[in-house]
Length: 205
Image 1 (cartoon, rainbow, N blue to C red):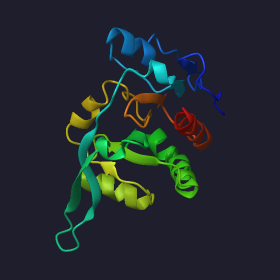
Image 2: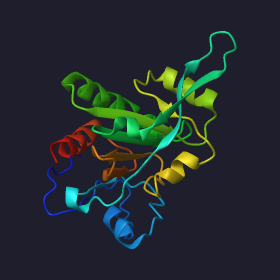
Image 3: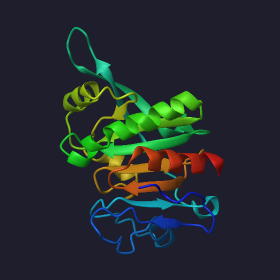
C-alpha cells in the first residue's frame, strides 16, 4: 500500500494498518510535544511523517557495528559507529531481530530500497539495530540474507534507549533528516515503495 506523498500541513499520520489498531495517542508529534516517550506497544504498520518545522526530536545513535568475523578465531568483528557519521545525509534506521517474523519478511524490501538509493547516488545511509540476538547470530542472519549494510550489535538495550522510545515494536524503521532529526517512522513492517517514498520526501524537504 503506497503512502501519500508530501509533507504539507505538518504531521501526516498515515494509516497503513495491518491489524486495525490505532496509535492510542502515541504519535511522534504528541510524544515530542508532551515528552511522553512510551512508543508503540504493537507494530500495526502505521506510517508517520513530520514536516521540517515539526521535527523537534534529534536522535544521536552510537554503538558497535558488526563488520564480519576474524578469519582465525571466528570471533565477531565490531567497529565503533555513530550517527554523526551520517550528518548531511538521510539516515534510515531499522530495528530488527532474527526471532521476529515481520523483520524477516521485510528484508527483501529493505534491500530493494537500499539498492535504489545506491543506484541513484542520493545521500542516504542505512543502519540496522539488532535486538536480543547474540553478535554471532546477528552476523549469521546478515550473511544468510546478504544484507548490504551493517547493523549495530545488541548491547543490552543501550542503543534502543538512544532511540527515545520511537522504536518499540519489532520491526521499526526511523528516518532521520540531514540534521539528525526524526522525520518519519514506520511502526511495523515496511515495504519498498513506502520506504523509498518516505526517504524521497525527506530528501526533498
